[in-house]
Length: 329
Image (tube, rainbow, N blue to C red):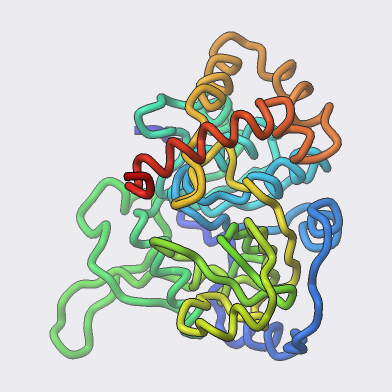
């Protein structure tokens, strides 16, 4: 088990719902056009020292374009919610962007292997870490979205993970059962990639939502990247599909193929060759060269896509996803 610098039960984010409520009370709820560029969104909404939460799951439906731009703009001293964080953690670790992390799942890229860049920042004590489970972090978002300071659960009790966590053990007032009080998690910035959005930030996601609805409601500022911008009337025709409402959102950016090299359900498969290229560069000590080629040396995400094969590669990945999902018969 990976152990990073001990925090002695630290909380990286204040769980006080009344303090958060004061912030949200002042936040504008006007339904205005929020379209901007990735560069503008990161420059205006992500500040050194902020605590960020990333939507999606592993390398599935991740906001790659924004993560690259955070590295490109050399944002530092961020906090990271490591809720199923695989390639997103790998990107931010490569840029040494964060120095504290609530960990549920980091470093590993599932069957692809372990990220050496991610391992390095933890093993060298560059990151302060507190451990949770995937469910615990998800429920911490849920508590924040509900406006309560904590949510009771039975996870982690009696485990080694509990020794490195920050929850408090409490007694149920009704049954006397021991419970874990999971503190609310209010990120400064939530970053989420969706299938479609209108210019106001009304977002729809196809397939599993993970914790993105709660991240959007818990975060003080929300950046949305979307596969496509659609007319507001299209959103209104299927209101039951809108999982993130406009009043949670601060920026909307249309980024086709914005989860690449990750998977976007029903759109395109993950680029396993490129993800392996990341891992190989880390193992062979060529990470600086790799980052210069693909992130620091590129103007934006579109230039990165061109370097990785452009439309030809994306078409291949789309065909692969369609075959997997049975869209082709």
